[in-house]
Amino acid sequence: MAGSARTIPPPPVNPETKPFWDAAAQGRLLIKRCTACDEPHWYPRAICPFCGSERTEWMEASGHGTIYSYSVFRRAPIPYAIAYVTLAEGPTMMTNIVDCDLDAIRIGQAVRVAFKPTDGGPPVPMFAPA
Amino acid sequence: MTIKGKAYIAGIFEHPTRKADDKSLAQLHAEAAAGALGDAGLTRADVDGYFCAGDAPGLGGLSMADYMGLKVRHIDTTESGGSSYVIHVAHAAEAIVTGKCNVALITLAGRPRAEGMATGTAPRSYGPAAPDVAFEFPFGPTVVNQYAMAAMRHMHQYGTTSAQLAWIKVAASQHAQHNPHALLREVVTVEEVVSSPIIADPLHRLDCCVITDGGGAIVVTKPEVAKSLKRPLVRVLGAGEAVKHQMGGKVDLTYTGAVWSGPAAFAEAGVTPSDVKYVSIYDSFTITVLITLEDLGFCPKGQGGKLVADGNLISGVGRLPFNTDGGGLCNNHPGNRGGLTKVVEAVRQLRGEAHPKVQVRNCDVALAHGTGGSLATRHGSATLIMGRE
Image (cartoon, rainbow over all chains, first blue to last red; front, side, top):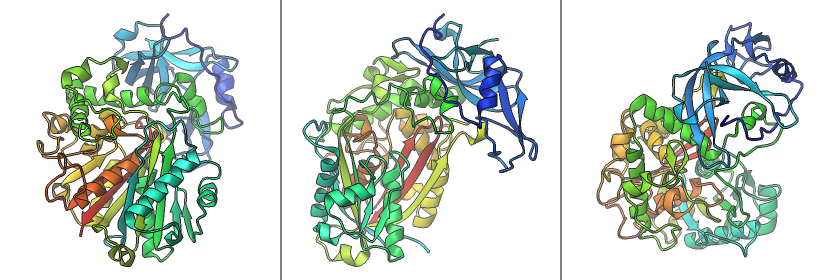
């Protein structure tokens, strides 16, 4: 399918984010939530970007979201859609929209997470029409 | 404490090259420095403060001070991408006000064309330790498709059109035809912009700035020094800087850090947008200009499309002349960093030294704004307001 044929570079994994990538390998999308201010955030950090607390914990996201914005990169050898998806839990994350007709993508469209393999690293969370 | 009226821009230089196969990066910095010092009527020996950003080779300020033989008592290598040099002018003014230096030199140079860099179309990584890289780089963020997402959202939310964005390029091209150094001197139409190939929806090829080698330099001095020279006097009136990012996932691509840097600069200068006769607005892409003008208060939020349309940005035609050198869209974007040339053209306008075809009459207050990084992820915003004395 268009958008999934290109080689995806592997995400660098570090001690702070290893649980995220371990879960990704199992097809689970984790986000971080702060137990001090109760805010979920993205991208995941050990220290809450809203209140500065170290009391952050991993939680599993539903994997459902809507497209906030997107752009189909026509100039690329294999065109692909970069996007920001707003998760049902609140945070908005950068991703790709895949497994669909790139010309049919719309802002506000409902999407669902689809982990895609990378070149030698853990899979990364992309999204497909729900 | 304020910098208002306490520092002057005494020297400016824009390197005439647009492709520097035969020069080194350090050499371009030094040539730019010599040009700005010569413009001011000063020498290297007068410089006691030096400013540069991430484009400087080696250990940045240390390597360049070494190469140029500078003896300085103040150094500042603030890095905020293409907006760095607008911030440097403000920081130079602050250093002058506090007595840390009397003559500040700011340099920029780059040679992305000579090096064959895929500037806007290849994902750029700032290394595996960047905290964001794992959550962005796999998705292929390039400069173009990131700014394109900001444009797409603005269109969705406010009804902005490709034709309105095209007017920004049209205005830049109208100005560039008079600039003998401009990379693109051909006047283009709205039709030509919107029918140029799509690079990343909804941005066309002609919505994107040029890629050029070259550089430039600025000399900022204390008032006593400026008044001893033979150049028209251009004062720093006010400045503001800000960083905008993804805000922990509360992403909003419809505004920039100019919503913070702009009001700070206007407040310090004691002027309002209606007092500004000329604006240099960072124009990496047409959308950058439109959103920035809204955020600086030149029109209500969401009305940028109407503001820029119908030639309103063309000098001698519209209400708000902008980027009269042709800007990054047509003239020059040295080292992929356009902030310095924004200040340079604003100073030319205040001096009355812009090309006669684009010179704004009675140009007594001008604004330069830089945007560095990406609208879609994280960027620095810097606003500088200057006045003719």
